[in-house]
Image 1 (tube, helix red, strand yellow):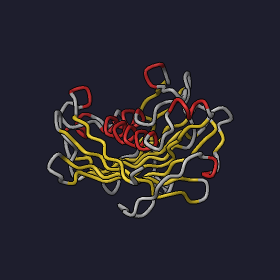
Image 2 (tube, helix red, strand yellow):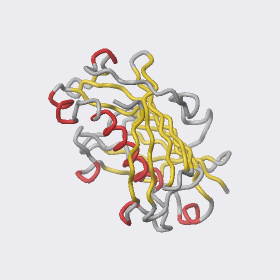
Image 3 (cartoon, rainbow, N blue to C red):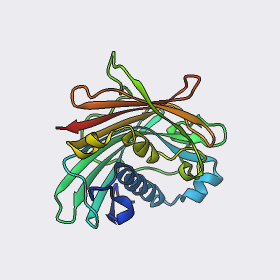
Image 4 (cartoon, one colour):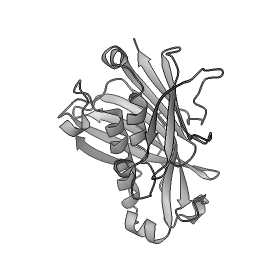
Length: 244
């Protein structure tokens, strides 16, 4: 198996926002698909993973974009494993356009989990050898997202329904980006440019769960978002990085 996987995808109208840019949730889905395909190329399909009671859980992802791809633009996503450290796996991505121009890069941290017991498994439990890529797009992301002392105000309440859950029975990783961009007002959406998105997932949100979305005012070109349950369980934290 090649240490690097390349996935080609053409942005469709369903992927684009009102400005014709790829939605951040769609881009996260594309990255997720590339990672899945790379693992499947090892010879273990998602169906076999489920039969073995295993699944992949994204812990943290940090994505930096010089430019978002546009509607009907073809992108190439390169992804490779940087191996494991302790119980966690690390994976990098590079996004290019059809001419080979770099559009952005991402760094991520994953865990192999027992999908029935909801427990993290040791990397040695994975039944295939994973080749390690020689490249790196930067330092591994840490879990910290919210800046110290940041003040949050409740924005809206969301209930996890059929439209958001995936085969693992929880709110899909990519859907969180839509929840976060929904806290921005019309002026924020129209003005400026989002160049980065960092998310850490703390707890699963499952069908029927209620999530309180809170946000900060823009601080140092960042808007912070947090999703919690009514009784204080922290589902996720996000930093949206904006360029004026």
